[in-house]
Image 1 (cartoon, rainbow, N blue to C red):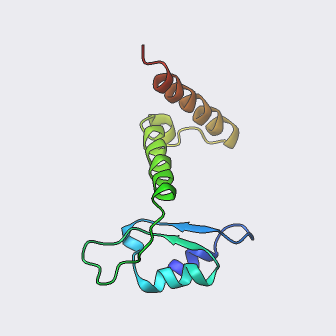
Image 2 (image 1 turned 180 degrees about the vertical axis):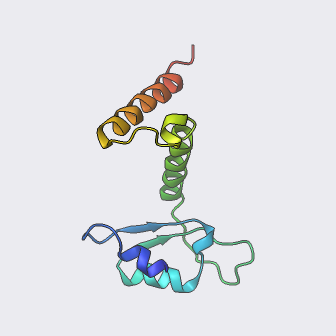
Length: 108
């Protein structure tokens, strides 16, 4: 299923494939390389031959995105998708992001 996931999305070729430890296998890494992308997948603790290089900076970016989505889902209207139209939902997402940024920046 990993190869199917790689082929979904826009028609542009990805430069990197960032995934979590659940996708750590030689086949998944080979599928990413076949598309011309660098696999950024952490190694499981029981891996026999771990790869030599790992893009930590790219993986940290993935963690930041997941943390932001987690903070967004703390807002009940967004998590339950109470707003039915795209315009109203995106407005509430923007409002929630504004609240998150104000809380993050204004610490005094």
